[in-house]
Image 1: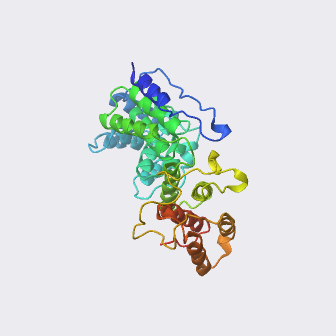
Image 2 (image 1 turned 180 degrees about the vertical axis):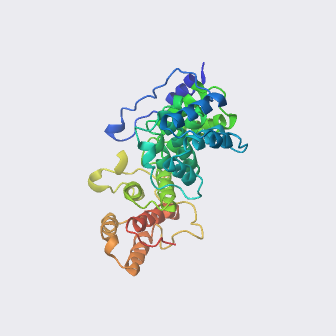
Image 3 (image 1 turned 90 degrees about the vertical axis):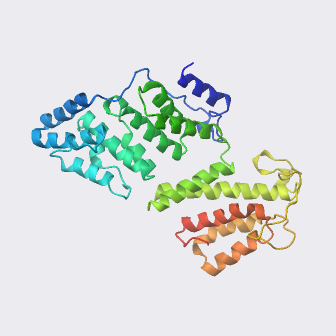
Length: 361
């Protein structure tokens, strides 16, 4: 059995392709595989292709080309990129930006130019994607690789590896699975480190819970939100992630409240298909463990959260002064069991990020 069939069978058997909650996601496309045998491009072939790009553009400079290929510290991909960049300020800028410590905020227009030679575009895009995936700018890395075919790059293993890393990090599990399987099945002589990391990603994704309300999935959204803020990406994509965090945490808080009330759900119906009288994890409607020193204290810790006040707080958060926001946090969390403290803290941190307020300590 090939690695492809082993991994695909394992993924299916463990529910990796289980349908998420939304109807639009119920039909998950299976990865589409090719059957080509990809291998690293031979150095002489890669050089000839790069020089052909220069000659076609009337920019060939034999001395500059030779200087690039004499460099001992460059990978084949970098040599190709530097060669096709000879005489092209735009291509030189792509390479220079990729070598800076800061991640790129947008994909350079050159990498979207359909008139650019496909070989030049593919390898410049891979240089850009590799650099930005390493800087955790995963969305930009994927955007750069969109439309690039692995047959055009001199390093097909790098193409699938960095693509998979970006897809995994942004929770595109089926796309990531497809990239990893192609890396392992279709690329000859791919580096062992790529294969090992690919298997680690597969093992991680097999354990993902398809329920969007699962707290580990919310944690991944939190990680992505924090990552984008670290990269100074506070725009629409980040705000959309933050809204999803607030929505999912709100659902979990309501569910926790319903369970802790011992069945007093609105209209007899509990969130997430629960039933009146459902117990908390551990078999009891009340906490049985003492709260840690850092826990939220106050009273018996019945675990009650006022749904109405919680919703009003979320709706009015952007207009409230800091002292009123702090007071609301204390009021809404006073009797909540310590086990829910991280969830509540992140709920209000997410509200603060949505409205551009300083983070809660």
